Image (cartoon, rainbow, N blue to C red; front, side, top):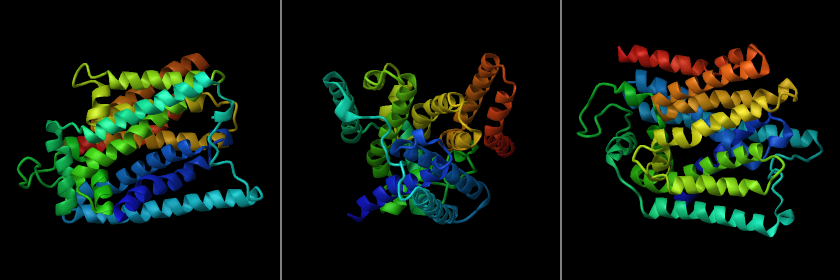
Length: 360
């Protein structure tokens, strides 16, 4: 029972309240529980990166417990700050706040066909979750990523040993800066559960719905007026994931069979999140600049989350934003767009610089 509460606390409650910090600076029509949760995970992983990478690189002994203790305090403080922002806005508006409204998803007004489509989508996601947990897939990468999480949990050391033999080894820069396995270890320690179980059972239950939450927000952008098309879009995305195992290298294969690996999260969550942020930011130019600050904060966190997932994801996201900046500059005839998007990539520049220094 305590383990279940720990998972709910660290995988739902804490990121939800953390998400209220950036959502405070987003226009009201986008404030809903799904967006708050997405913002919370992005900010939480960004903070985790800032705390964990220095510990990996410069702390010699007990670097895992040092980083996790600091992260625990910072995460709790951010969650408290989110609660205070929510409370203060509700007090300012006479005790009313619309942060917990589920957008314009009105079940009573839907047609029978739309309700059936939503049911099919939820059944499709449920089937994927069931298969991911009960038919867990194991591959060679588990011998590295999952074991890194396990060694951090048991040895209180991050990237100090070679997972294949357990012996001491030099810092593996290619993997050490992508600290997602350490976050898995953090969750395992907080729940007092084996890191392998957390990777193969708990992570799919969290990361798969989180990815579909991004696709749902994208569907709201693509089908602003035709709401009945949103579940159809999600069904198509779900079918792509279900039948995309045409190669061991496809994103769909990673999404369902290697969900707990950072590169799977990069392809299924981070890159779609980049498109969603671009849709939101450049589709809301009529809004006051102050109402978009939260979106820019989230985009910075997306860039930092890419570094948490995979080193190569940092390059991919930066290139994607560069291409988007060039195209948007031509379409909108605004030279400031590349400058703004470039500023959001500053964490990526520091990440690459550190990578190059350590590689030497």
